[in-house]
Structures are given as C-alpha cells and as structure tokens.
Amino acid sequence: MPVVTLYWDELERLVGKGREEILSKLPMLGCDIERVEDDHIDVEFFPNRPDLYSVEGVARALR
Image (cartoon, rainbow, N blue to C red; front, side):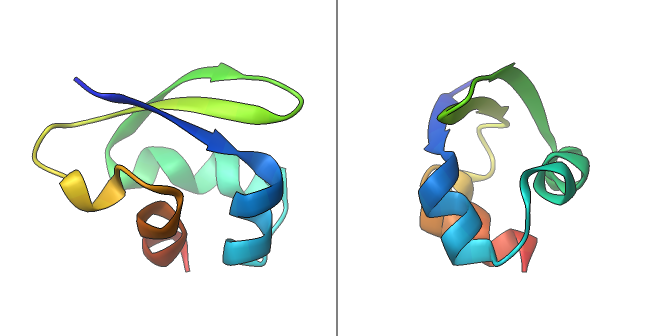
C-alpha cells in the first residue's frame, strides 16, 4: 500500500485543525499511521483511495 508523507504545517493550514484532532480522524479515512515526527507524518493509504495521495486530498476528506 502507498505511504504518503504529509507535512504538518501545510496539513494544519489546509484542514484548520490541530494535530491531535487530525490524528484522531485519520484512521476513519481507512489509513494506517506509520510514523509521526515533529515536522511530518507518514500515512499508509489503501490503494482504492488515490484521492488521498496528496495533502490537498487528505485535507478535503478531513474537513
């Protein structure tokens, strides 16, 4: 399954929510959180969700 790196500054700006709320909602999109770092997060998405392969797609789904 594809692993996508999402940078916190861009993701928080696009979603308009904080890290804790984003982390709690990501599993609802059908993904596995691989790694959480200070500046980015690595997320593994199912192959049937190519709309989530970019930070803009993830932000749209989280809003």
